[in-house]
Image 1: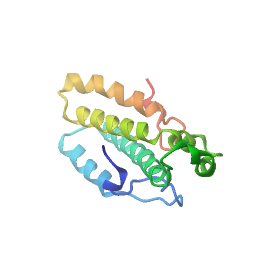
Image 2 (image 1 turned 45 degrees about the horizontal axis):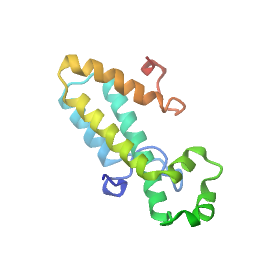
Image 3 (image 1 turned 90 degrees about the horizontal axis):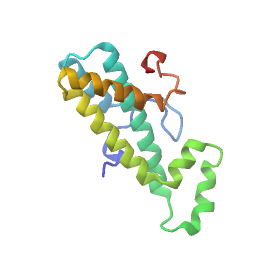
Image 4 (image 1 turned 45 degrees about the vertical axis):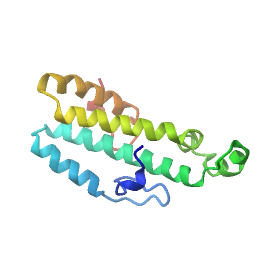
Length: 145
């Protein structure tokens, strides 16, 4: 299973202190995207999705590090997430979040390596994945289907 601690911290808010930073992982993707001659819009959408995946992984990774091994401690450790619904969901099932992040990375990779006809269909899939983050300030309305 992919663990966020295996990758560099990504762009966007670091879950602990809200700082902004750019990751090596995203810069590597930018270079790879240029090499396969994607459109600027596609590259930006891929960057956006990978950044959101990294944010989700960092939150889930933290939850995994503080999570109790049984449900008996749930009320004690989950209270730190009580006023943030998104983090609370991650707290309840962080393993699912890791699996979803891995699946999203595989979809992005399939898009990057697809033949033009497949890339068009996978581009629709990427826009659908991005819609889940429509409330994020970096989301573009042009990505909506």
